[in-house]
Length: 91
Image (cartoon, rainbow, N blue to C red):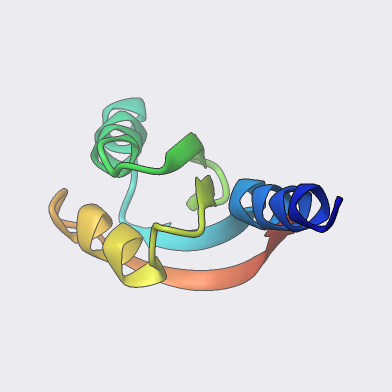
């Protein structure tokens, strides 16, 4: 019984996700948002990426194996600079 309980605790911890919002100044067209989304999507553990051109914000849902620095580095590969606005747990 204890093993079963420990398994469920571990499984629920492993399945929790994070959601972060990044400000990416300089995006000025749909191709810009597509490039940023594709770069972030290539990271293992990223579940969903959305970008809003009018607010210059990118929202990323990802597993705990992805680090904020990884996402910022992926954004940088598209010649844009990202700044973390917020991060919270997503269930």
